[in-house]
Amino acid sequence: MAERDYYEVLEIERDASPDELKKAYRRMAVRFHPDRNPGDKASEERFKEAAEAYSVLSDPEKRARYDRFGRAGLGAQPGFSGFDADVFADFGDVLGNLFGFGNIFGGGRRGPRGGQDLQYDLELTFEQAAAGIETPIRIPRLDRCGTCRGTGAEGKDGVQTCPTCRGRGQVAFQQGFFTIARTCGTCGGSGKKIVKPCKTCEGRGRVRVEKSVTVRVPAGVDDGMRLRISGEGEASPDGGPAGDLYVLLHVADHPVFTREGPQLHMEVSITMAQAALGTTLAVPLLAGGNQEVELDPGTQSGTVVRLRGKGLPALDRSARGDLHVHVRVVTPERLTPEQRELYEKLAVLDGVDAPGRGLFERVKDIFGS
Image 1 (cartoon, rainbow, N blue to C red):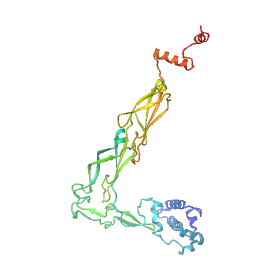
Image 2: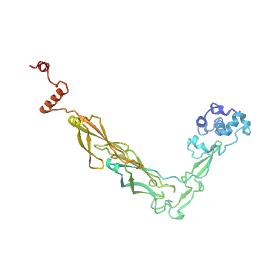
Image 3: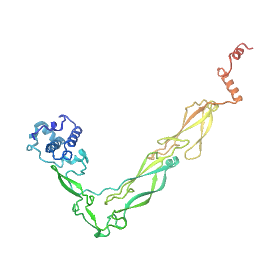
Image 4: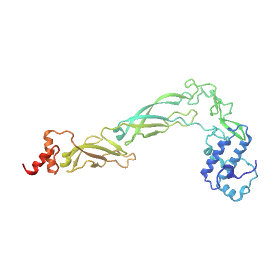
């Protein structure tokens, strides 16, 4: 295949950013990968060509030399010269596990897998979330078998080196111009084969148990928060670290208080008389008891009284929130005859006609007869 300009190969402009370069290479890799074009030599060459272009342009120093001198500046012979392991250190980041190959260039046995993470939904009252609690929970999970200590085999002679991969955990085969490494299907990547299974776990290395775990919920948590308890998930299937336990918190609503972070809010209703004359309220506190709050005469609906330090503790324990008391002046919907008479007198004093008085009554007041 005739040599082409690297920018032309990847179909990008010469001032393309590293991110645009990576996206272009991925697009070419998907299009011309040998797995998608089995037996197509032209596609294989295009894939090699794109890989060569990316190996140069992804290196800032090589790209600068190429931009100035072309291929002659790279000191390389015409044609594809193979892959540089340093250049392709981020190959997995570019292509990911696009075609199901964890390590497309081989690279030996993979490490042990971590155990599965677990999630537990914990219901809390509003008060428990505010004060914090310590509570045991029971978690069904897979733990390492105590009989075989996770090997899955009965005794030392119960396990042998896998005959397929010879202990490497991977098998290699040729795919186009690549040597592909895949997880060994016989041993699942462990490099070992169980010939005499453990009777307790039946060769699995793990047994299902129900474990009691103590959860410490700090004061001030909110609905939807997650607590992470390291190592309390499921055991690894092949000797790796155990997974983690995530405790998802569900906090119930409170009939009186609402919250915004560590700030508490509540609403109190007062009559028009209390608003006009002033009054003393007994405001309930979340921790228990009441606190007296003085309202000045002429208090308006929507007034907010702030009680410092009577809210929720901040999770970092640097401060405590406040309690915000929202005052609402309530207009009566039904009046007794006595109340109506008093409100009518008040209306006259305010210079407002009392409701329900007709034109004749108002004329009588004017002429005094």
